[in-house]
Image (cartoon, rainbow, N blue to C red; front, side):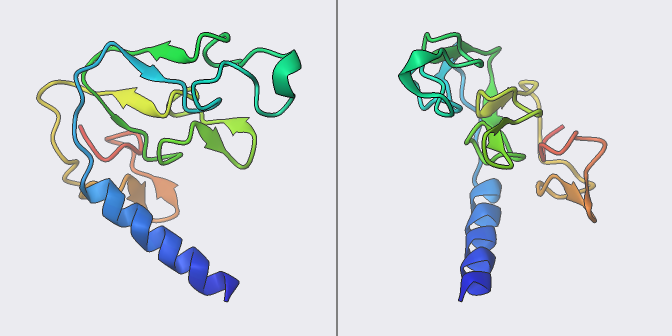
Length: 122
């Protein structure tokens, strides 16, 4: 049953990847701490390492949801996503379009797509 849930979650994630759109904003809520400013790993005694306790992360517009962490800001549990730096969104060029090599999936076999750096847009 657990395997089936993983397959369904992966399918939903692939569907979300196809519907990503660009957002023209200057800041986003910190995905790593959920906008609270508190480090979720250590609780209220420590500040979020991504946003510095502000709850917001400045970005350069336009931005799209990070494919590596699916906008959560985390990889492998409590590790900060290296692709987006924990923000949950990555900056792209205004004229960016779906990557022709990976067709927007961000994957190339077992590795990430090199031309788009795993983000599905170039």
